[in-house]
Each structure stands twice: as C-alpha cells, then as structure tokens.
Image (cartoon, rainbow, N blue to C red; front, side, top):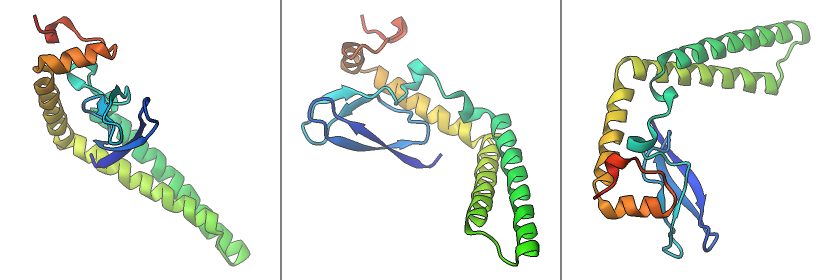
Length: 159
C-alpha cells in the first residue's frame, strides 16, 4: 500500500507528531516525540506479530464488492449527468464531482483487488511480519511495550 501519515499528539508536551506509516499503520506503537523526546504509545499502530493483520488487507472479496458498488454508483451518476444535460442543457458541478469520486473509488478498489490477487499484498504483509518479529527479539523493546500496558504474549517475553 501507499505511504500515509498519522498525526499523533504527544501526551507530555501536546506537540502533534506527523508519522509516516503504511496504509494499515503496521509498525511499532512506541512513538518518540520530535519536540520533547518522550516516548508514548499510539494504539493506532499494529505490532503485527502480536495484534495480527487487518483482515481487509488480504480480503480480495471486500475490494471486489467495493469495486462493484462504486461502479454501479458511478454508472447511476453518469446517467444522471446525461439526463440533466438533456433536460436542462447543462450539468451540475456537484454531480460531476460525485461521479468522479465514484470513478476514483472504482479504480482504487480494483487496484487493491488486483494487488491481493497477484500476491503483492501478502508479500508486503510478510515483510511487515518479519520487521515486527525482529523488533520483538529486543528485550528492552518488549519491556517498553509492557511498561505502556501493551499485552505481550508469553512467547515474546524474555526470560
């Protein structure tokens, strides 16, 4: 998936930290504030070896349904555009905007469907899992997660 951003406010200094992440926010939930350097937990991030993956990340059927939904909506709106043009001699800007958004939704869902079917999403998830497992090998990282109240399965706790 593409690169996204999460705005994460620091509980200490209230500075909003803009953090690069993937679309599913897979990664370490431990955030270091860029302003005061304190660390805090942002539960929107998933440590996938513990929390698992978002089920939609590999559910091709979800995106196939989304593609069909947006396609039907787009067709209806384009039909409305033609009808409005025929009856009124012009088209409304909002109707054009909504039809365009339906088209973008169709294309976006179709791209995600194809990525899943071709195995790219699974390869990406495998990489995120490896990164997560690597972080969880670090005993100090695991202790830090625990100190923030993160529930750590026994298999990741260092003895």
